[in-house]
Image (tube, rainbow over all chains, first blue to last red; front, side):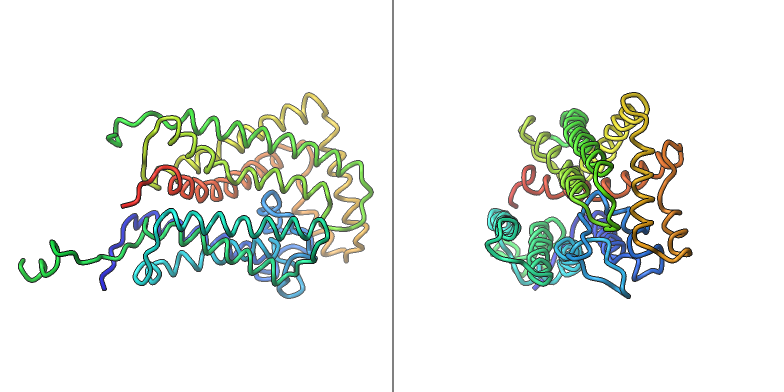
Length: 164
Length: 182
């Protein structure tokens, strides 16, 4: 099975940005800077995440710069992007189904947040992380065919490499 | 439509930037007033911060709004690379709009707001009873109110963070609204 890649420069830029975002999101526990409440990593994400320590994982006793759900989103998006060549090789899903997948997972996250807010259930660090992971992964999957696409041999192209 | 003859994307960028810039500013200012009117308890998370976060989560989807606007207004398709560019520019312009509104508010409408937020942040740190060394380190990350360096610091961080996030949301917007199934 052959795989065709395109938009290589954009793929490289996007993957690099995503990986850097994950490294910053891991917070001051990874790279020793700042205190438990003030560091440049917190400042970077302060306008993008609530950073509630009770809803965040910690490294070396210091809360990460984003909550568990955001950590899931950023890390799964980065890992998803890195895995796209494999995903593109073995799976091919229609764009409309990929959009439905993203909408479905956003809805799932919204239901989780709403249910927790009105007291129907209490979500946990793990449940928030898992739902975030699903969201990040679905976004990466949405972009699959923009970067990698499986070459399917048709009657017109089958054997053409030998003919040439 | 030929890629070279496509209409300018700047109107869509400006629409996206104005929407996110206004919302970020208004909710950001509300969040600052809520902060200074609350009692510092040493927590790094407050309800006011939660409101500010909502504002900026909205700021991160500026690229999505701008690419949707560009694609639907002009009924065109375009590659995701162009979506990335539109998203990045929307993020940068949104931060500029938001900073401009903040400058007007903090220097003309209510010049004491910045100092009040700064004092509140110091009191919040003091309540935490940090060791002197950590307190000093924390102070290094808190910009002096009204200083040009603090404005440039906020502008720089905002451009990098929201530029990157809107670049991603611009790609997603282009994928959803402006590309065709091959």
